[in-house]
Length: 324
Length: 205
Image (tube, rainbow over all chains, first blue to last red; front, side):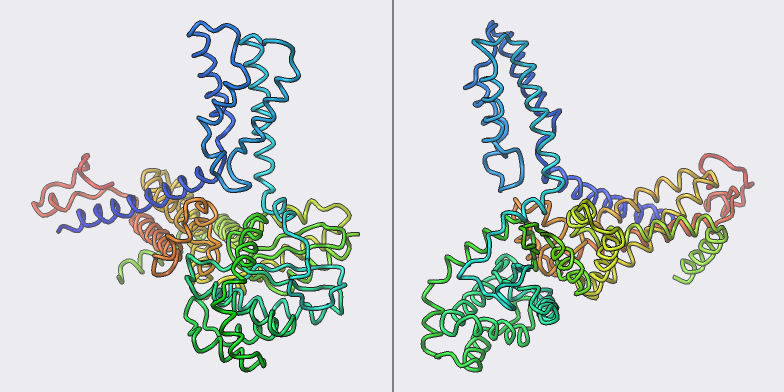
């Protein structure tokens, strides 16, 4: 092959790869946002035009609008919390707009009202999307009796961590938060909750979460933390842990009854709690682990993604301490 | 290989002889690096900076301390390609600007496309790949991207590596253009036939 042809071929391959990468980025960005204002208004306008051309001069009624939204924005019904257009809110908004009017609206009046409502709604959605992670962090359930707490239970600042026992960054972060709480002199407490990412760490991450709950059930809060500390010391992470050896070994080391621990592991009685933790993590905005929410005494939240350095967490907890 | 390195050296000397291009490359490399490291916590930073009654120095300290995430929140591979992408992005942009100033817009445009692809691919590789907190899993969380990533041998870090490679190719191709003298050359076929070196459409300028 001639050098010039070879060069051209190389360039063509590289450009093709670049286009594929750019397209992947474009598609992923499109998928993550709700339908934009122009698109929704266009849909409504098309439907209104259809109504007019079919001879209906009274305009759309409420039921028709609701049906329209149900038909055209399926993402609103199926999307997870916080993503996509929320159907119930759109319908409520339109209902409010309709209730504000009297009698049957003309097509033009109705069109204007719906359009204004949709524009206002989408603007609200867009703002919510921008500040989504921190807004969602407010959904994190408050500390309860079943939570595993490290540090003073009366500490004014709480760091709630959603963690996966097979995540290497959670392993790193575990030591960081422990140091922080130890050095905080009773100002910060740490709550550990489960967020096993089963697609990346199938079977093992969940089983280890169950094992930690069994440790807590059989030996109390201290046993839970002893289990977690020792597990993170032993695990090579990334689903490489030999759980058949490591879990009984830790149970033995921390003084748990071997038989009770083994029966607890297969009982399935902690599955519900772990599922709830996963759901809570997702509704509080978590996309990966470790995911932490720092909560001040007054309830102000700071959502922190990843295994960030101790200095950063310390600064944030100090900020939370200033909150009343 | 030796000629590629020679071209790269010549091109870097040409471009970075001007302080303006050094400033441009440094600023863009820094911006790309900051974007990559802060990306998982943009919302947090927005929240911190919009909190009233907190000293600006305290806010800046939080932003600066989050930069330590390059050590704690990245593995060696992801930290390596994140830094490489940032540096190559800066060099790439400076070279494109240099070519544009030399009025070699066609070469600049072609390499801009490759460089953009590199950046796009690199952006997909940002984050903690092992735990699924990537741009791609964030964006495609509704479509089971974490499951798809689990099928990849490096669980998504391939995107970052591809990004660095594309930017490297772009820099290398541009180096060749920059190192070549601005003159017209006959096509190799004509040179073989000892035809007069008359510039035509088929000749390389």
